[in-house]
Amino acid sequence: MSKPCRVAIIGATGIAGQQFVVALQRHPWFTISRLAASARSAGKKYAEALLDAGTGARRWWCEEEPSSHVG
Image (tube, rainbow, N blue to C red; front, side, top):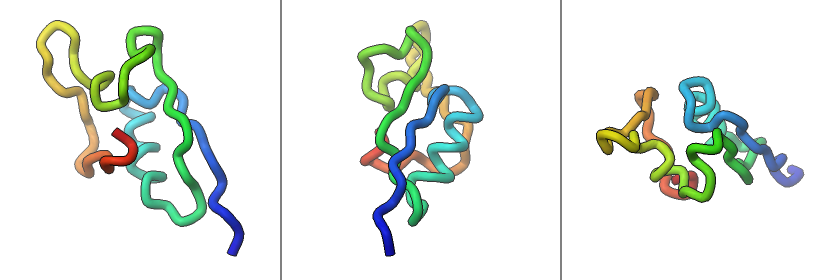
C-alpha cells in the first residue's frame, strides 16, 4: 500500500469545508496536511477559528466532531 495523499481543504471553517474535514480526517487514502479559510481566521488554530468573535459560540455544523489532530 502506498502512502496516503496529502490534501489541503480550502474554506475549512465553512459548512462545506467542515464536511470535507469530517469525511477526510480518518480516510485511509488521504491525510489532511493544510486547512485554509478566510482572512478572519488567519493565524488561528482551527478550533479557535471556529469560534464566533462576537459571542464566542462555536460554529460547527457537522454531527461528527473534528478529531484532535485536526483541531
